[in-house]
Length: 126
Image (cartoon, rainbow, N blue to C red; front, side, top):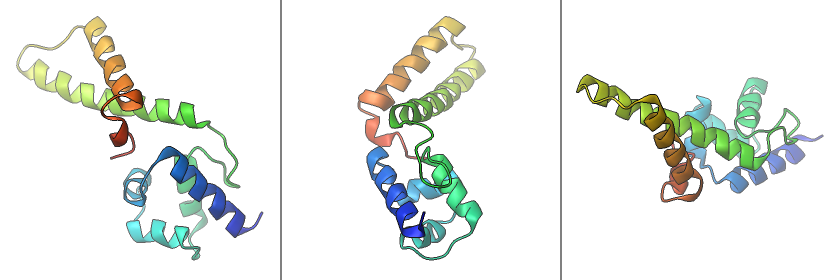
């Protein structure tokens, strides 16, 4: 596989899931310029390629390891857990924390909003 072929696969996947270079940079803990260099075809470290492909659910050769629906569900779960944990922590400080069953409902509802609702455009925002 050529570098150009890998780059085409990664660009296609990036577009399919709708992630920006800025968010890809934040989520992969790589610099914006490093990501930009990769997408412009410049030389980057192999570890950079690995971080980018892993985040996008691809293997090192650009082949799909995680399908797009699963990738989106995983990201929605991560974001929902994070957001609900912030609400729960604040509520607990005020002695108004939610019970586990209510927390699970809130997590599922938040996850659904990231997948199909009004927060869908924020799924890949960091």
